[in-house]
Length: 222
View 1 (cartoon, rainbow, N blue to C red):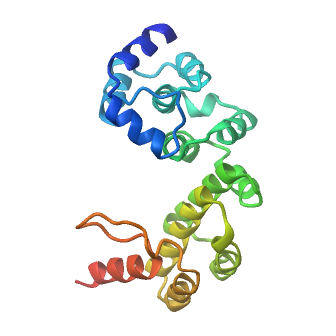
View 2: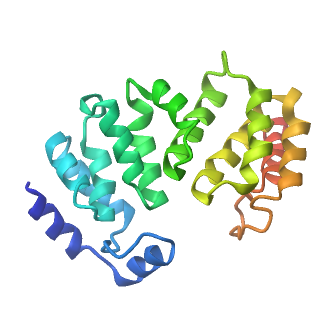
């Protein structure tokens, strides 16, 4: 399947209501409005195709970039190229698919994490904090959790929203997993008030860290 073939398929599956929703959320105009499930189904049909995936990424179309993350071979992407890919993203949905499907399985992810944790680029910072949260959950050895809380307390309130989201995720997971840091994590969340008023659908947990931490700890003890 060629790039043109894929783009025609994606265009045909587009829905104007979905497109408008994503545009309103910051996706930009280069988007068709394809359902996420349809993108995954197309990826299963195409299977892994690294060259096609790279070419689709370069189109700048949102659905093509999402599909790209499911087709490429992460180990074949040089770290410098992956860094450039992260920096090129302007929509958080694309950033998160790239992190989940490519960055988290890349052999250089720890070196990239350390570099991105010192970056003032919103999407690099978002990726760095996402990888740090993964370390908090799965591999906390040699992580200074108190120092991470210091940074979150100092930086999260004024951070760009793209980075703020994953910083808040790290804050919540530290509070959830580590009782010795829980009260401080909750105090930081209360102090900063980030996502305090975030609209949360019925039945979902608020991303406001004190509520999030309390709810998840309660589930663990029930």
